[in-house]
Image (cartoon, rainbow, N blue to C red):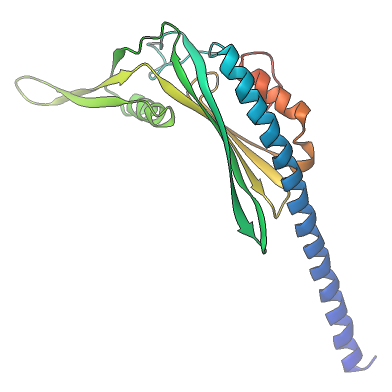
Length: 216
């Protein structure tokens, strides 16, 4: 084999790899777009039904793991989608669902939680942030020495919950981020686009209303 023939062979091999990678990108993009179109329709319909039902929030909500929130209901579900340009084509950027967690009595109250250890402080501040809870933080100090004794948080007994679907068009997978469902916290999981079906979203819907679910 001449040197030129060897170069041609190497070039053909590289070209084959590039074409294969390009086909994989196209397949990943198509899988994500099909999944996102289906998911958007499903989630918009789910929001409409849950806005009528206004189901109770499953699980327990507490900032410090001790003082519970009052019984909460889920209301004002909204679904939206954003798009972006990728490789000269318009594709889904993300799909988002958000809703309110409100006291079942309809009355939002101000509660107080006090923490004096760093792990407790980190837990409370993280849950306040994740839950988008309105609050005011105060320092509790010794009246004579002014030594810091504890942190006091006055907070409103209402919160927010979210679901975000973010497609990765290069890999063909959909990342799910579920926040404050069944308690304060975030669940992150991912599924191949081909597995994002109405059956999977049924499992997600079950999770929202507190039924046994295989989602995540």
